[in-house]
Amino acid sequence: HRISERLACSLAGLSRTAYRYLARSGGDLELRARMKALAVEYPRYGYLILHSLLKGEGLVVNKKAMPTAICVTSRIFRNRISSLLFGIPFN
Image 1: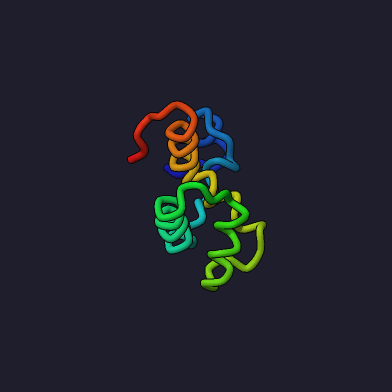
Image 2: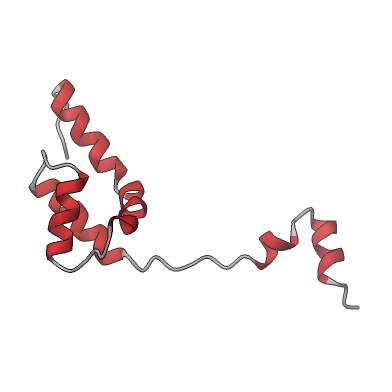
């Protein structure tokens, strides 16, 4: 027997919105890779200068595209700050 989506979700304890959710693909993989490379190449540059470098290469249209990439690469920036402040080696 077939049961409705509403009943199946309520029995499973899952919201119907979560059941229908489709994750968007990460279309900015090239941007992330280049940002990581630039962060390693220029360890003292902040995100604004990195943004202008990426914009010069045609990878970023505006600054609104940067937060996602920055969240993904935040580990690089945190490690870089730790290495500058505390002398911890940056990998």
